[in-house]
Amino acid sequence: MRAIIARERGVGVGDLVLEDRPYPYAAENDVVVRVHAAGFTPGELEWPGTWTDRAGHDRAPAIPGHELSGVVAELGYGTTGLTVGQRVFGLTDWARDGSLAEFTAVEARNLAALPAGIDHTVAAALPISGLTAWQGLFDHARLTTGQTVLITGAAGAVGSIAVQLAREAGAVVIGAGRARDREVVLDLGAQDFVDLDTKDVREAGDVDVVFDVIGGEVLAGAAELVRPGGTLVSVAMPPDVRPKDGRALFFVVEPDRVRLADLARRVSDGRLRPLVGAVRPLSETADACVRTSSVIGKTIIVP
Ligand SMILES: NC(=O)c1ccc[n+]([C@@H]2O[C@H](COP(=O)([O-])OP(=O)(O)OC[C@H]3O[C@@H](n4cnc5c(N)ncnc54)[C@H](OP(=O)(O)O)[C@@H]3O)[C@@H](O)[C@H]2O)c1
Image (cartoon, rainbow, N blue to C red; front, side, top):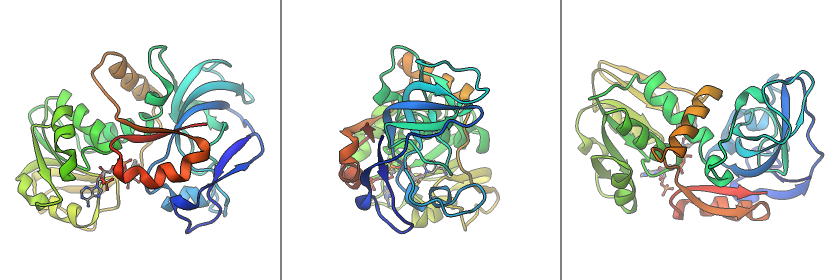
């Protein structure tokens, strides 16, 4: 099968290459999925699981990409709950070869059924971003109706879904990001926007929750805004700063079939709109990922 390869630790997205690789093995409780659309998340090439398996052993070269939409091609030994030919979408395992390939093996429990009306290119933009946004806002930060949340990188893949979910939950939403992103973020439902190209994030004012996808100085500044008892969640990096009287945490998104189904329902109902940017073939993955900065919306690769 054709797949995208990251050869060794330290390579950048521009070094991703197309190669022939063996068809994947479906272990117990796995399925092999024929990938119809896949997402690549910025930062993946630095994630530990890209380079080491669960025993900590080197597993290079790696096939990146950890979210997909496709069709079940094969069941592993003892796998139940999904059937061959079924449309599915979800996460692939961090420490195994991923979704930038014609086929990938994945634990069946990481996937959910894809409703008929949702296109594969839209579904592939949902698993990592949707689950990360949900878990960050509601499981970790415990955001509730009437609270104020500041979402950084608000036009990005994770941020744009976080804005929509927070707004629907009845929160007051302040987005922060590049100047060019203002209209997009307000259109998604944010009530206010801080242009980080010209302003300091502290101009957002006090908030109950910060949901950060940028890290660094933006994260440090945003930590100062958290009201007593509030929470700062970053998915970019473990915070080395803490609100004066609040919690600060980092987490890695977990698979959740039930929540995936809920997110898909919201898309079907028109209540949630994943932003899809460029849709490019597998052979153009490196170029597509290098260019993500100039394109609003998640870059989707179609094998
Ligand atoms: N821990 C987890 O489980 C988890 C899960 C998903 C994602 N992540 C991480 O979360 C981060 C965001 O992922 P994503 O898929 O949402 O990426 P994305 O689509 O590239 O979104 C990031 C957004 O933030 C903006 N941005 C970045 N730096 C900025 C700065 N200094 N000032 C203003 N805007 C800035 C980006 O604009 P430009 O493109 O113009 O820079 C983009 O709009 C990545 O680091 C990713 O690895 C972690």
